Length: 367
Image (cartoon, rainbow, N blue to C red; front, side, top):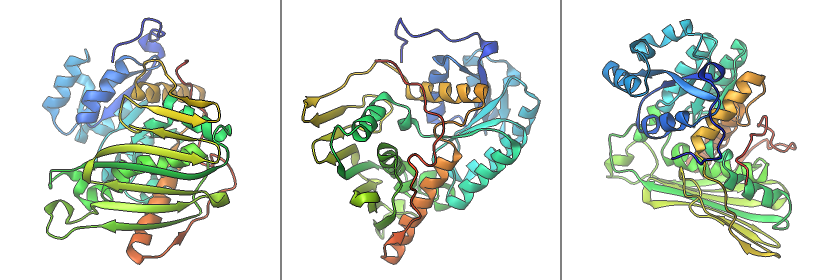
């Protein structure tokens, strides 16, 4: 995505935070590397891949040296790199705990793709390891860093819609490849829920600033479809928030690409459609003042993540989406799977504190 002329140019490289990108898949090559190039406060200092030739090729394309490309077997050698202050883990979910823990032991700050682990226990172990090592941990919830999602949150929390009563979100897509790691329970921890449904869950929590007190879920795992031998094809869930506010989530690996968010209050409503892609978000707010679609400057979601975490590293502040935020989603997802398995409502502790698991508010692109 090209820079706008008025965007502040990056700081000198020796003033920015150096990241090692761990895993060079589609997300890294198509989104993270371009985002780092437009980052004001971060840059790619090293690459780690299971394929040495692949890492070397990307390193050359980035203008890095041969010694800046590592295999997974060489990962611990990053301990000798003072210019690598943080790692961004972009691996299958089941590997997050291992590499986050190893990075923390090296004294590297950790930015980890969602979901943080494969279950709540796994995610909490990552939080504990980073805390013990005295390094920062951020869960890569990109939708908590976009101006569109913040405008939706502000509309809800500033009372523009009146008291909120209902929320609904869908995130679905078709997963065609039966051999994809996302369809292997040991690697992914589940099906569409921890991969795409987590966007709906996390965004509903973010929009309201509150935590669900109970959940009820059903899931469908068809027989005879090789894609869903191990994981669910679809899940529908009802979540009960404080003051009688209820939310519904639907997610699937077997339905046409859909990403929507709706919030209904007594005096207005808002919709985002699409709500979760990397770009092209559309927000529509209807209230007593009429209906409008706010416009925002051009930005890159991953650049905003890089810059926020880099600022937190330099200031020592907790990131807005720390590891605890990732753990909380796992607590809720574990409860959803329990409900789907037992057919019962599952109670949760909830929280009387708003934004109970979040840290320092991020800087957003100015309107």
